[in-house]
Structure formats: structure tokens, C-alpha cells
Image (tube, rainbow, N blue to C red):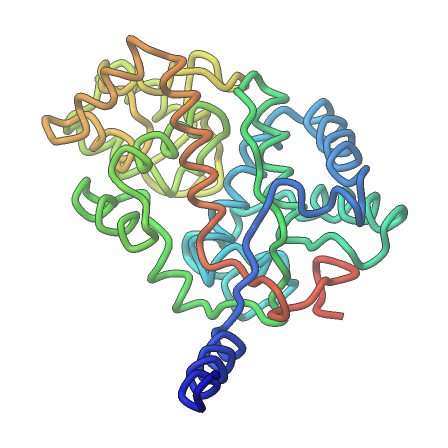
Length: 316
């Protein structure tokens, strides 16, 4: 005969199970049944955009990075908000690629309305853009949902790294997002493509500290001591449109464009990682993909949280 205590224990266990919060997990197969052509549709759109402008690859990777580091990977940076994170010091007049993400989103909307989030479109776009310029692919986990509001300007300025950050500041900043020093160096390697504005590297090229004099002189031609804040220079002077390990080769020659680039090879703890990526370029490519996957896990909205926007620029 079953005692009343047995029924009490069983009932208690059931109650506890029912009340345990269920947090949906990201999965690479999230859209396999609901929108099986989502990834191929995004890939086609991104390839076309990068073929029109090679610089766009770097812009999309950066856009994903700046989205994830502020309020999590929720597509908040895509919202057309003129007072929030888009106008933060690290974003204002520099983040770009919104129209490319929107085009990819609308291509997906045409086959699977209100299914694929803008946050996921951006995550996939960053991967496909990297591959389009010679980078190694990685598996993107999916299932993020979109935020309804942008992050504040102050939050973005607090969370995003600065071009003038020291090595220890960078390590701490990335650690706050559950990314270790190796992840930080690998992700910084995305600066093997793209360009930077004069205002972000002026202090470095005129300070004459830990910089190759010839490199500084070359960069000064397009970046005067006053004015020309938005003049652009390639982050990697050698192969600016190819995703390779030349960024790290530049660092050991004291040719890092940003101060936050050069600190990765300045007698500190990250020197050995930089040297490893020079001698083993495949290791860099592999670590970069792994770090992008980890970054994509930063505070996503899943399950019943957030929404699926129809257009990425508005919380409709």
C-alpha cells in the first residue's frame, strides 16, 4: 500500500519541476523547420553587398560586436534611435551597414514573414561577411529575439572598448562579457580588415611612442594634427580587404594603427598569443570563430522574451 507521504513527495517534485524557469537555448538548427532557406538567403544578400564594397565585411563584423557588447546580442543597435547607443562615442559617425542588414532581413521576410530575428540576421551576416573576404566559417547558433528598445548612450559608452584602452582595461572589459584574453586578442584580429577614422588614431601617430616612424609618417599624410577627423586609413596597410593574420605581423613591427591594437604586443601577457597567431595562422582563424560563437552567446533574448521585428530599424 502506498503511503500518503509518497503522494506528497511526488506532488512536491511535480510542483518544483513546473516552477523551474525554462530558458530556451540557442541552436544552429533553430530555423531548420520554420525557415529552411533563411541562411542561404542571408548568405546571398551579404555576398552581394560585400562584392559591391569590400569594406562592408569589416563593418558588419563590427556592427555585430557592438550589438553584443551592449545589452547583449539583441539587435538593439539596429534600431533607428537618435538618442541611444548609436550616438555613443564609440558608435557615432562610425557604425555602418544598417542598410545591408535590413536588405538581408527583408529578403528573409519575403519567404518567412516574422520568423527570423534581426539579431540572428546580424549574427549570420557577420559570419558570411568574414567568409566573403577569406575568413574561415563557423557555426552560428540561432534563436535570438529582438529587443524593443535601444540601449542608452551611457551604457554603450561604458560597455564598449575605446581605441585608447590599455591592455589591462581591454582584458577586464572582455572578461565582463565572459570572454578571456585569448578571445580578446582573436576578436581584435578582425582589424585585419576595415578602416579607422583619423580621430581614433591621431594621438598615436603623433605621440611617437611604440610606433614605427615610417608608418607614423605615412599615416600623418591623411590625418593632420587638426581637422580631418573622419579621414580614413586601413587598419591593415598590407592586405586591408583580406581576412588573414597580417594584423598580428603589423603589431610586432610596431605598425598597429590604434593604441588598443599595439598594446596587444607591448611586452605584456598577450605577446605570446600574437606571436602564436603569426606562426600558426590557422590557429587564429579557428580561435576567431570560437570567440565569435562565445560573443554571440552574450545575454540573448530567447523564448518568450523580446520580439521578432518586421523591420530592423523599428520595434514594430
